[in-house]
Each structure stands twice: as structure tokens, then as C-alpha cells.
Image (tube, rainbow, N blue to C red; front, side, top):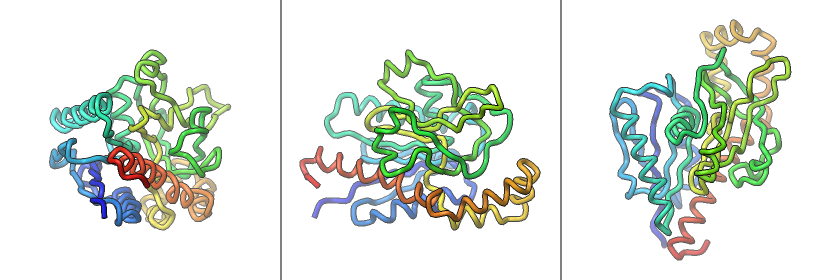
Length: 274
């Protein structure tokens, strides 16, 4: 029986209790016969995995300004990104990484692929995510409709992609936010394939209906959303959460796609064909 693949989960929530980490644990747990999971509290405790010890990395969402750090954890995080990227350039046995929301913004900023700036207003709720032409073929989105649904929760956005940097890295934009014809704002980038091994999403593919529905029903969250978007939008959000073709499908599909593909690639590189 082959050894389990080690997964490093980078907790970017700065010590805050959250649904995101629980959901990631749950999804990785579906592969318990193939994977083991270690968690690193990056921002609060300055924990960081030794990149050589792991084949798989997931970096979570998290609150706060992606343009600021404390002078310690973001330096460690950027070094990890460089170490993994450089490793993959020269080694046959690759390392695979998924960036979610806050981590996605950090990776975009580090690699210089696009601008990261503050939105005019918070984007929060169950939103449609639109595949680009490249995204239609990307294995991360296999089995998802176009558009598909996901939880969007951000005060910042990724815009103004650098064609030069994308070409240099061989990176691809694989998803965009919905069209807003009544506004003149540029569509934000919602997914990027940084390389064959590294990919990220601005949205939260880990979110599950039960956890998010409970979150929406909290009085303080309910009041905040109604103040931001109105009661009709809030009620519509509750309906979208429980529909099987929305975030439930994304939860069941996207991260499992990443994990299955990464496991297969790693096993093939080890000479174990699955």
C-alpha cells in the first residue's frame, strides 16, 4: 500500500474561528485513504511548512487587507511561493497548490500578475462565476456549469491583468465575475491558473450550504446584509444557498477536482499509476 500524500493547509484567518477551515477539513477528509493533513497558522503564529516535506498545499481565505502584513508572515509566505514555483521549474516530481480568496490576492500581488485594490463596496453572497475560454477547458472546473455558483466575500479585488507577466509565467485567467452592465467598473478576475501545478480562486469553493445558511441566519449577519443589499436580496440569497445546483455543487466539485488531479499526477510521477 503506497504512503499517503501529505497536505499542508495554510490557515490565513489570523486566529479567527471560521467556517472556511472546517469546510476544507471536511473536503480533504473525503480523501482520508490517500491524504494526511497538517495545519499551519500563518498569520497569528507565523507557522510555515517546510515545502520539501509536502506535495500538496492549500492556502485558505482570510480577513483583512491583502496589501498589508506584519513584516514576518507575508515574507515567509512569499518565500514559500517562490520555493514551490522554482522547484516545479527544475524537478520532475511537482508540488501542487490551491489559493483561496485572500491567499489568491496575495499570490497575484506577489507574482505581479494584476492589480489588487479595494472595491467600492463589499461583495458578499451567492454569486455566479463565469468561466473564460481557457476556463472552459481547465480541469479545476470540470463538471461545473457556465456560469456556476459560489460564495463571494471580499472587500478587495484583482483587476488590470498584466499581459506581459501572464505571458512570462504562462498563466491564464480562467474565471471572471459577472457582467455589471449598469456600472463602468472592470470585471474582476475570479480565477487564475498560475501554472499547471498552481491555481487559485477569488471566491470560496469550500463553502457548504449548511454552514453558510447558519452563518446567514445569525442576527448580526442578517442585519448587515439587509443594510447593504436590502431584504429582497437577503431572502434571495437564502434561497440560492439551499439549491442543489449552486454552492453545494461547487463544494462537491471544485476542490475535489484539484485534489484528484493532484493525487493522480503525484502518483504518476512516483511511478505509481492510478
